[in-house]
Length: 340
Image (tube, rainbow, N blue to C red; front, top):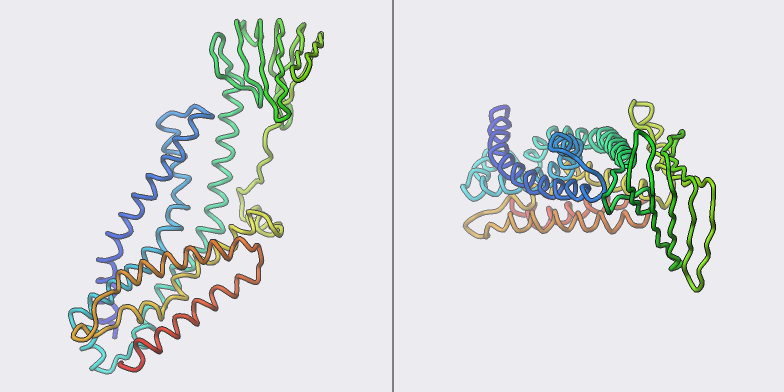
């Protein structure tokens, strides 16, 4: 039994890693494009790009590992069936269910690893990413350069003619809000200050023009524009992580992520009978459609997971895994049990 277990593990590895590396590379490109899109908001160098990518690795692993594991085991078992090895193993008294028991330990360990990645590593990585982006936005607003167009302070476009030390001279700001009101501010000088959770742009000796159906002009000696930075939930320690998930509210995106994370983490362990159902066949009487079935059911599970998670209901944590297990039992009873 130990030799058989070792042999199956080696053959699964030979199938798993090529598929995993391919999916990992494709997913990495997608995440790198998403990171590159941040350059429209902040300026990052190559080192910072690598840092942001490293924070995306837990998410990449979380989505590629279970799908790769699901597809690779089915393909591997189907290869053994196609070469009559599983039929020989069965003739020596090892039933499909006994073979399924050999897959339980590695499937369980992978599910535990996925739970750790999704509920511990991903929140910490997201926290570090939000802190980095906030810092870069704040840094960009501190480093407003004179004679450059397209710079922003909060929702305002800002143009500065001159800068001496920490003081800006001859400032112009423009804002267009949802009420179709254009606002223009002209000031002789300005400074930027920091508060607890906001940046302040203090303008001196200027005027505010509001243009809608009619034009309004207000002159001022001093005006303060606040740009409040988004509040980030601290997720640095284990206690922070517990508090992060403990305070999940109904109907929020965090609840949806919790449900999706649970479903993806359970996929390896609740799919044991799917591995056997699609991997076992007699090549003399059946075609090898295992790859097609593996991809179709992996996509089906992903779509089902997305659909169910939108209901924002914790009862779905039981219904989807239960449905998946029952479906695997039905397919196993119809496809494998009568023949092996």
